[in-house]
Amino acid sequence: MSFHITSLADPQATASSRRLAWLASDDDGVPLGSAFLRLFTKEGQEHLAELELAVHGAERRRGVGTRLLDAAVGAAKAERRRSVIAQAVQGSPADLFLAARGFRQVLALTYARLTLADLNSAAIDALVELPHPGYRLTDWAGIVPDALARSFADSRRAMDDMPMEGTDFGTVAWDVDRVVAAAEAVARRGELLHTVAAVDETDGSVVGFSELVVPGDGLGNGRHYGTAVLPGHRGRGLARWMKAASIRHARERHPELAALCTDTAESNAPMRAVNDALGYVPTHKAVEYQLDL
Image (tube, rainbow, N blue to C red; front, side, top):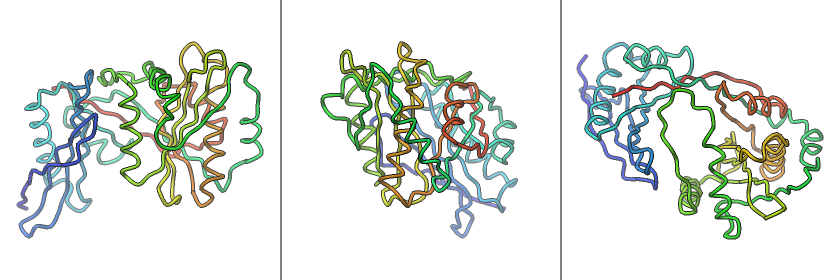
């Protein structure tokens, strides 16, 4: 079978990355597969690229995926990238494909889902109302309020020690401009961002956060983007408190929403325990792969 690889350009660059793309098609122009390469552009991650590659099931094992991969890796080298990362569902054709082509496993992830129709609302309410002396919860939709912007940006360093195992992910430096840009990107996609934050009552600073993104029509599944607490404030149940508040908000504001989804590194035992306590049920496992260039 003959096919063609067409190089494309994604015009929608973001504040932290830009993308290249390739389309595989047969002689009649029928699409067979695609590859997207996200090139990170922020300081601390300029060495990194992220690959998304897909081939139609009927066209696999004919060299389409290999040609798309060659194009993406060649571009990553031309862009002076040190590492290319890609994710695959454990045991899937993509998992086998990446492992056979020089990628190495660097991170294992567990995906979990909370079905809102089965939610124990009374238990969630009890967790939200449980006192946490010295702290209070606050929340907002979309962009962080000006009064909390600085300390919220500072609180993002709570993610710095998130288990990444062997991933060459680099360092992510968060400032107010970046948190605003991230919220604006969600809005441009037509989705709704809701953030719950834990505030230290001694100085009014944000010490933890939990972010949830919901489809704009309030249907389907919401997705947790991140839940983290600064090191000096851990061990007080703040992560479970914030995530419970996020769940309650989703239930009240989006009654037609089906479920909330989350993913956690298998080595992140504390966060997996939070998810278990809140009723999240594991759905599948994924593997993060890395190709060292």
